[in-house]
Length: 330
Ligand code: TXA
Ligand code: MG
Image 1 (cartoon, rainbow, N blue to C red):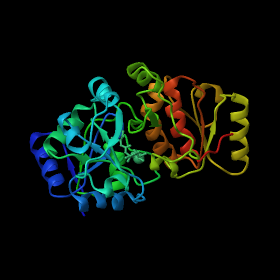
Image 2: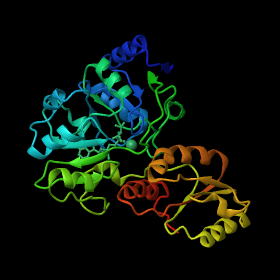
Image 3: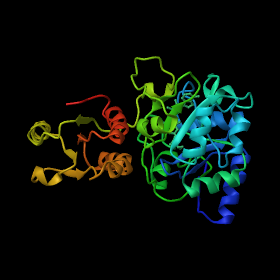
């Protein structure tokens, strides 16, 4: 299959929209990461998403919409909490899980009675969704288990020849995926942390909104149990920013014949060793995280990352870093 590279022109957006309605796969930018779009009302199209990504079919997909009325077409009801989130934080980088209507097939939700719904903030994403004119399922547009793509070039790296088109838009500003907020139970819960934090949600809803990320607890967001965000070289993660420990770890790898790189906040502390700046603020770390991993895996054979921020947003970055390193914390 030849993958078309489309631009954000009226003509190309029409082509992209038609491809979606014809049951094809089109990757598109959002403010979080690039998504791999399919017509949510076309079961065959949705199923082909799992094939293109090599994604296990028990990991459900988020349905993307561009205006709020579409939410009632796919969710059974909007609870008062859901209404507050919809009114105040959508469009935005939050995904809400609600009871699903029967129009949403089991292959989207992996058999769950609920559906995850997101209205992206990115104008380009909403332009695409408007031209598609149907609700669009979209997982991150990477091969399963790999770091999510935050530029169209990274989408092409994984998806060239496997999907009909890539909408070549802006680089993603947020850089990590949306917060997944479960609103189906008695109490709201965060199933995947993101830039919309527990603090922000608690304040809005006037009640605690815990983050449920323990993989051993009942897995309600099935995607979090799989290997995730992994570069294709080994990776170790340090949470202390202990310069001596990092330098020793690096030197030991070099003595073993490795060519490692330190992905750190202060490259200047490591002399002539290979280093790369992880980002000077949490926002910058998030924005460049997946791109940095995809860049460094091509030049080095071991990534030693160090991250010691303790803000609330830092937790969502740590959530990705720990998985990228396959829980290898030094
Ligand atoms: O920022 C994002 O959310 C991006 C962009 C493209 O919108 N999408 C994304 O999709 O990250 P994906 O497929 O990589 O991750 C979807 C997450 C998974 O952890 C999945 O288990 C969870 O959402 N999810 C989907 N439907 C769910 C449901 N009904 N109940 C609980 N979790 C659900
Ligand atoms: Mg993903």
